[in-house]
Picture 1 (cartoon, rainbow, N blue to C red):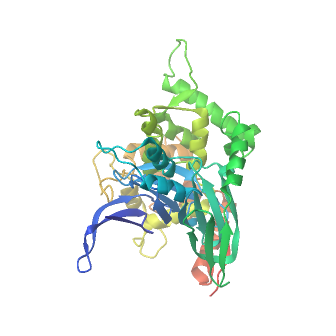
Picture 2: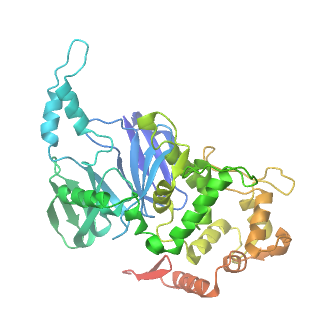
Picture 3: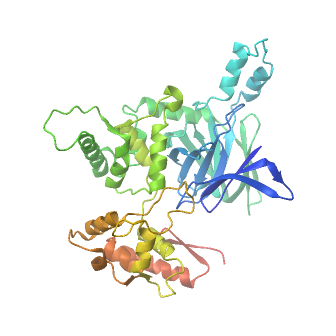
Length: 454
């Protein structure tokens, strides 16, 4: 009796079908903010099978992430990197096991005893039909353009567990699966074509098994997605920061012998991410820490309080921005921050900027409204935190906010003079802004322009 929807506003909304009607409309029971930048594009129940708890939803977004959300408490249970070819995954479907019908028959013929228990054979069939994270389960996906693929569960962002192909020369309008999971059907757009695809999940399972057997530390497939690989500067920095986090967690000002166990506390993860150039929002930090702490709760009944280096590498690959952050992203964020309050001058007054960025004034008093939703974390900074950030950005410990920020600043000058983006990067952004303003038949995405049909 539940219905869920996702939208461009970045929210997951739950409706009660029982309390809804054609006259009163849909009755909303709860809503959660699931994204601040990315836009959700696809969703499905997760995990899937003959029986399930129906409490989790898998959501894909246009930042190429797959997120599992718990609909009971509104927390994110996992975030993994999605396939990045052909656009975001806007169509998701479960792919049933080939022996689904046979197992379903066994389960339906369960012999119920007087104490309402089922036979061992029937219970085994039920378990096979709905293994929570069984390697034999797959999901099928399609992008808005061209691509069709399958992903082996459990979701972990491992590229060795994915397979995709070009299904249509253009738009993929819809997909469907056969009841036994042997076939996938796709419908194109302008090509007026319906394709039937035979699915061979064994080949994907074989590739992932071979990759797992050849992986001595569990992160080989992820290291291929790190700039420079095993010998690169980024992985070297990750190791150095990880060692330092171990020392930091035990106290830096001490002469006693240290015992390093190869793990860092969960609380150190946000600092590690920032040191590597990924600056998550408070909502992203909240989701990240919840994912780690609950990662083994189902098996052990305990929260995870420490992570190994290998676990951190996987977490970093899955959570960091898929294509990085460029000058256009920063300028877009500043334009959003300005809204319509600049009077068309293209500049934002210093007082208004501080009002939107800060939660406390110089005296520590609370200012402004924290959030549209009381359950959302407050992303704003205190006056002291903001002042320290500015000092670090301009590399001057004596700098004051009024000295660094002009009376009114435009996004380009903020990005160049305060955030440190170079002129070459910002000149491309400025050119894209001109294209956006003058050509209705051109769409600018991520600093690259794509011609669209007028």
